[in-house]
Image (cartoon, rainbow, N blue to C red; front, side, top):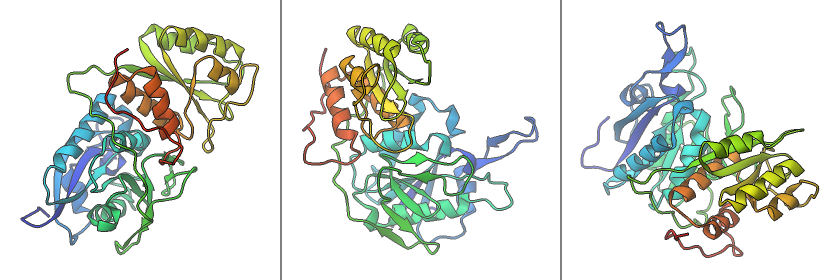
Length: 351
């Protein structure tokens, strides 16, 4: 269905399992092949006009930070038309939590942006993509979804982008927010029910197209970990490191010493956790979270490594100073604004 002079939804197709089929020319691998129009056709004749834009056709495990920014640019372009009710982005589930969160960090429009996808390929005997897309279009067209920012709609549940995680590799209920409540739900008939509109953080500036993105890496902490991986990341030019630490954000004395050296050299280090729920709490010594904080690492709050890295990557690309980066993590690490958060400038500082 194509839009006329009436309100409509824009579908931005980027690939992923929802667009994938088993290839006969690549050893039987599943590859993103379907266009956005082909995906939309599987949903049947809906009641809301939809305009399809093919942004790219990739498995989301292939995406770069530049690709993610390109998707965000396509969202902004779609919302330039006042007739647009909202935007749906079909996306591979592997990195939905990163791209949706980046889009949310930059989103400055009350109209909803809804990410969805599939766990089963388009040529599966019982694909879940058509139902997920049908429901996502209903959410994007709903006035009740306005003001909620960027959302992830999957298997009938709707989640805020901040805190959304892929929690299972194969189950149809692929997403959850272990540290928060769903934003709402959508029924099999397309009835959308949303919770009250939350407070929203001010959007961050959009990086200029010509600005070179900094490198940010995730370094895993595990029993007996030394500093080799952290130093390797720095040796190839990382400006920022996210530690996927143990427990509530712990490492060991060797890692703490390397973090001290890195932060002294101007590298921004953030402590997140490999645990799927709960905040980073600087409590323990002998190389634990208290020592990491003393070494200069910034606690990520409730942001898990994937989204902590997304935020850090964006802030570094915007040339934010370390104090600004620390304040943004202090505030956004809570996922939602609250009275105790800092009031943050969004203009990058020098130095």
